[in-house]
Length: 119
Figure (cartoon, rainbow, N blue to C red):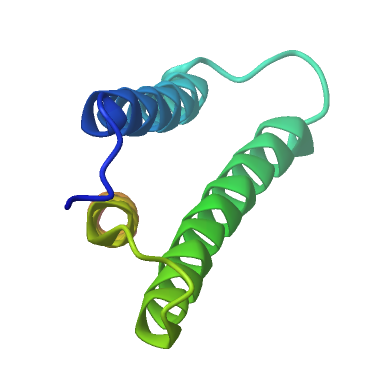
């Protein structure tokens, strides 16, 4: 007999979708802030906002990965019996990590482009 509750998959998929959308919105905010003309205020405000946003995103990815690891260990110990829940957590961690890699690649490319402009 299956331990999966009715509607389990749809609710968790919707929650994962909401998290991806919120991270996407945060990345769009970062992109908009970096593309916007400099404000008339202090020059270090946009940099601090970007650094804070990036730090928060990395902390969220880290917490998702830790949760996935904890669920996997709990499953191996027999504390969690719902394999779908464990697999969903692993998939969520994988998506978060992949998104982080894509952001890193974009930042690295932008940095390299800026460094080429100086010469």
